[in-house]
Amino acid sequence: MIIKNNFNKNNSQINYLEQEKEGIRKAVAKWEERFKKNEIDREKFLKQNQEFAKRQQELSKKINKLK
Image (cartoon, rainbow, N blue to C red):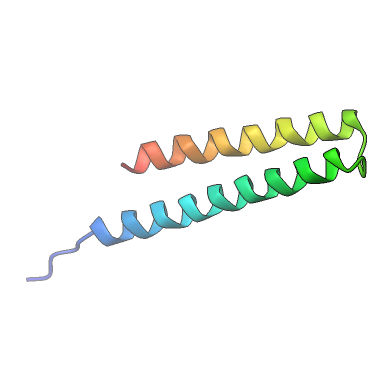
């Protein structure tokens, strides 16, 4: 008899999503540095921050759904 264990599958998906979320955090930090150096304008900075926030919320929902 074969028993499927989905426990590892969920953990690997959660790990992948956590890594993606960490990548977004790093991107936000770099984006903020560029803004502080006046390499990008304020409107573009705010618009991109909204996109980052949406993606982080979506990832958080997916992670909570898998737990």
